[in-house]
Image (tube, rainbow, N blue to C red; front, side, top):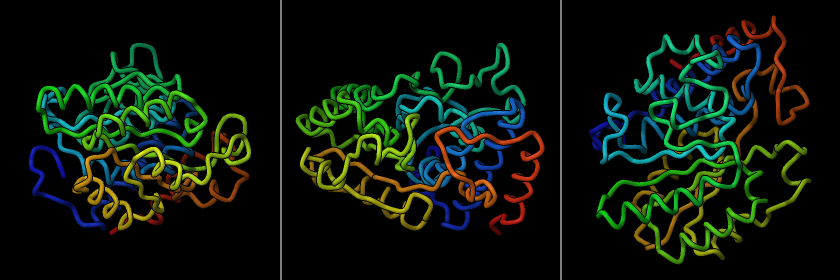
Length: 284
């Protein structure tokens, strides 16, 4: 579903092009500051493209339109990726890309709702997004507003007790207007998520908490489109979760090949190389 008109949907090729644009914008912002969570930005680009150019209903010129679907960025340090999507969606002007992380910019390095149009919540303290999403979904139900709430969270947040309290609450209240998207890239600040505190068996766990569960390749556009569609039309009165297995630094082979950590360091001479690598595989 796209801005204003849910009937208009892009082909998978067009969505892949949007994902490529999001990756490119994220790298360009990283170059402005010489740093940023670019590995996550590259990895989550397909999910964001499927979200903003297939699943979500919104009006680019009216970010606070009451009928919009809410997209919550629980993982505030992924802001570089969401800014790229908001610019690509026309919610933010592209020229602001050059202000990323600078004084008085509307694009701070960690997402803040008070600064940025289209940024629904201030993320950063991980494990809070889903709880906020539950509250928003309840509020929309109370107002008989048919909009959906989408909450993008990290696999590291699966180790937060607040996440599972929110998951129980969502199922208890039968919040069929809530979709949780888990970016499972198997990285958090302390190392691999699966080695720090494993959440497996993840599909069974979410199902036991009363959710409609799907697990897909988060870098496969066809799989993402099918999952978003299934989440939207599911007839069961329960919340929905899409677990997306993603590859950090996706689309830039020389970064993908490195030993990946939570924060991928990119040298000063590598930003242009990363853009060139993306350009060499531009979707047609």
